[in-house]
Length: 127
Image (cartoon, rainbow, N blue to C red; front, top):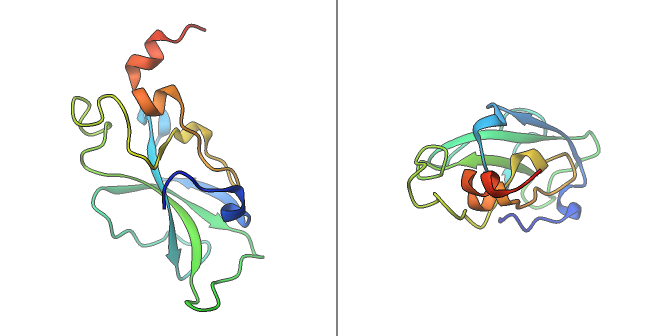
């Protein structure tokens, strides 16, 4: 699922757990994953690495068909800007990319000049 999440998708989020320091990350990718548990670290089966995840509150119920919980996971792929600053996303960003500084429980992340254009955009923004 892309960055086009709605607050309704995130209604039972309680906490965001970051596994890395956000200071050096212009963006993270976000997706809704289905997991067996609502509060433990979810399994990660993509290329790249998981940089954070959401814990759900006690009112969250699993999907009646699958028995799984929908939770947001934040991740980066090997070709993302943090690993390859002069690569494909030197400028621009993937569709599911949002600024990690805008992520909070129950709030979808937001695209910002930093997440979409990188450090060059930050240098041109006046205070």
